[in-house]
Every structure is written in C-alpha cells, then in structure tokens.
Image 1 (cartoon, one colour):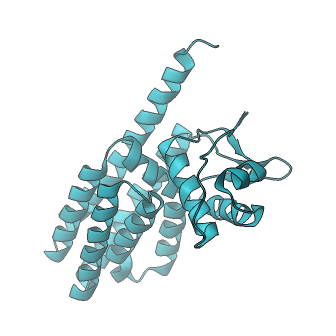
Image 2: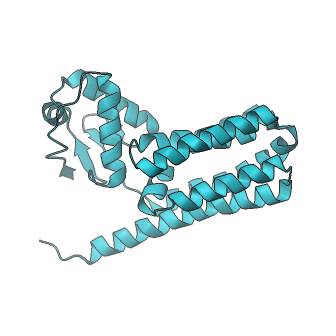
Amino acid sequence: MKDVKKVTDTAIPRQSLTSAVADRLRDQIIRGDIPEGSRLRQNTIAAQYRVSRIPVREALRQLDAEGLITIVPNRGALVPELLPDDIEELFSIRALLEPAVLRVSIPRLTDAVLSKAEAVLGKFESELRKEEHIGNWGRLNWQFHSLLYSGANRPHFLSIIRNVNHNGERYTRLQLFLTHGMKRANDEHHRILEFCRKREVDAACDLLREHILYAGQSLKQVVQESRSANAAKPEK
C-alpha cells in the first residue's frame, strides 16, 4: 500500500476550506498525481495544505460520497483501484437505461428545458477548455443528461439512472481527462441536443447509446493499457 508523502505544499486561501481541499484532492486523483492504491492521511494533508484536520476530514467524506475515494474503518481513506469490469458494467447499464428514458422524454421536452440544456453545455465547454476544476465535469455532464431525460416523468427510472451516474462519476471525469475525449463528448452532446430539438427520436437515442458505450470502452482500454505497462515495469 502506498502512502501519499507529498500532495502539494501550497497554502489554501481561507474561503470554503472544505470545498478547496476537496477540489484540490479531486483534481490530483483524477489527473493521476495521487495514484490508485494510495492512502490519504489527514495529518499529512493538513500540514501540506496548512489547514486544520477538520476541513480535511470533511473533504475526505465528500470525496467518499462521490465514490472517488473509500474510507475504510481502522485504515483511513484510500484511492480505490480502477477495475475494468466495473467500468464495463456501469457504462453498459447506462447504455441500456438512458436511451429508453430519452425515447419517452423527447416528445415532451419544452423549449425552456432545451434552452437550459444548451446553457449547461456552454458551461461544460468552458470547464473543458480550462481543464481546471475537473470535479465540475461529472456534475455538468449529469446536469445536461438529466435535463434531456426530465420529460419522461419516470421517477423510478430516473432514480436508478441518477444512482448509476453518481457511482460512475469518477469514471466519467477520468474518461474525459485520460482519453482526451473532451472534444468528441462535446460534439456528441450538441448533436444529441439538436436531434432532441428536431424530435428525431431514433437518431438521438442511437447516438446517446453510442456516446455512452464509446466512453466506457475508451476508458476501459486506457486502464487496461496502464495496467499492462505497469506490470511490464521491472521491480526496483
């Protein structure tokens, strides 16, 4: 098990310390600066960020709720491994459920909802260009998708989809960052939105399914290649 010996030696401004700590840790985990299998020690992080342990503890709880880390009793906070089978399962579930809900939703989508979805895409594009605050990517991605599904009036379906997206948000952010899939994802979002505006149901649902499956397959490939490369490295 690897310990994180140095996260970053930079003081955090005294705004919302919990959010600031969570944002910085999230970005470093997603970028791979803090690798999978690492243990996150509160004392170490607090000293390096020059804050007390309280915002660090709350930030770790927040990241645990997001699925980005795992808090294990008597062992502390760990960055879990990325498992290819988990990636495939989560994205396959999404590809099965989300087009079905979109199919019901499209005829009922109002112009106001479609305009909101377009505005979210504008924010999403801005965040992608900056490659900062990576934690916002998954949130904005889900916000866009959920607006398109809102016309379905299928609360049980939407609850399941929301939970799957929440559990897979880490993978969504990683897929965009590690595979450099931002441009493709953004282009496909715009095309899906345009199909929804034109009420082209089959085209929108087919593209959504392709969009989800490609994201899962590309991330799975990156993870498998990374594991193979690490396995081939000689032990020091």
